[in-house]
Image (cartoon, rainbow, N blue to C red; front, side, top):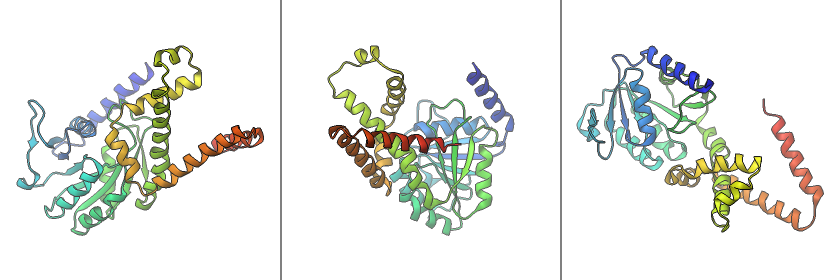
Length: 287
């Protein structure tokens, strides 16, 4: 009830901001899940929202077939496509001279480094952001949006203004720090849950039978892993494959699992207790 109430308050506050009055936005990849989220989010702020994608949805208004054939005079151009495709679109924009702020929302930034720099060098106002939530979000309280300054602080502040009416926490981050940290925050957490669900799905044990025997820990882990398994597998593969820091975290995870296996096989209770104690000490440092 509290979350529903807060969500309604946030939606009302976004609408009342009217920040998009007399402004327009073009969302490239606007018919994808995050593209649709941004379309709804900006429309609620009274933006005129235009959508560019492979094909329009049924009865879709303001659909743009080809960005090469229109004047890119929108206040914001949001690139909400797969990561590799985003790099291609940014390069394409280098020759189209958009007058507004161009921002990507990619989960991994390394493949976009050169295209973003090249677009900024043309004089275009460029901002790179990373919304740390999925398209099913109803309330931004406790959620984060990462902002990366690509050389135009004023443009960053204008993009931040889009989220000002929400309860989302806005985080400034350097481009070179993003993928290293995301390798742990997304990459590691994703692969742990994918591995967990892989073991269960290949175990031969019925899901409903395990549910009847579940513990508090199993229920919590299963809930998270179930959500992960229902996400876009192509995006999750890109998050693992395109991040230059992924091998570091994947190898560290593999090493940790092998060490735990070895501790159990060698009856080394002391080492097992030590790693759990170390983990507890690490978690106690969280504010």
